[in-house]
Length: 500
Image (cartoon, rainbow, N blue to C red; front, side, top):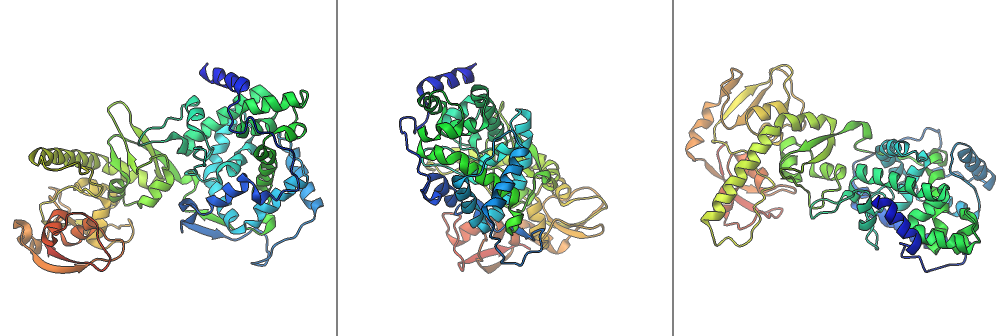
């Protein structure tokens, strides 16, 4: 009911920043000078698209590597007609559409990445479009809105793949808190966008007007229809729309063309690290940071952030009555499940310790009590675990109350692949099972002894990683070196008590 009331209010009052600005048609204007084009170009500079986690896939046509096809208008027109014949959306070719086609296909390198990212998001888009009986072609709207960047933000405050304002997002249950912004959740935002487009279609009965209303607001479209003597065809009321909205539908058609015929323009697809079918969800029942999760399942923080852009501070919140799900590569879901109890136990023990220290030290003024690199405490001893058939690093880590990251660090492993009979060095409390073997040579370190060595900090290292390498604690390293924070500099020399 509140959605209906909100939409009716929008019709009466207008909800767009452009509502009172009427522009004449400026068909001679270069589209690269429009807000839509500038927004598209700005997305190419964002971290999301600067990642190196893309792999180039050769074009299906046997074109020379640097060949750029030059096509006549008749070819463009023929292809647009083919698209129109297969869609309830009215595709048409004209000078404005041609300018947008030219604009998009000129961004060859970026479009290659864009097409690759579409293979991550489009299956999910299509599922929600189908659910709300929205034409599947409307998935291309996210290219115009955000260039498929789930972290995109506009100058006006819109955010996410579908560029929802906070107020509009609230109508479709997209909530914003200090930790989570549902507008940046690809799944929730896509469902909201499909629902919103269906609501707009129920008002206008025309998909081009749905696009225009999505951009400018129903009130603006309603007034343009009135000024056009009741016309309800986008192209006939276009002159009465704000400048950006005049370009919006042509830009959408240009984006649709690009995503349909990119191969014919010898644009090479760059595939992202993960595809839709490789991702699944798991519920997180305790508050934790991306850094902590990364250390427990051995998945880079960058990958966790890439798949979960809705978490604003790289922290997954949790309360007694409200848990959040996260998206991980399927292969890491099992590792998460196997380590789940260990993770939660580690977090609880750390919080208890932090609370105790806080009570003992009343002079501690406001420091953070979240340890992103916390690992289960060990007693300093080491032993060897012999891998059995069917075991995984995640299962072994859970068995001994440690993390996959730790086991890989202790054994110099570059991947999570292990084999039966392999011996893995483990620090901590030895299991009573018969596939462990005590390492007597390290037992002398149990009393807290060790050899003092100097360690030179390399790029990417942290105090926690260094402590794991030498079998000591972060606090020991900080105390030996008089450090007040965890910040390190490349080339810095640290005194370390090695217990390995």
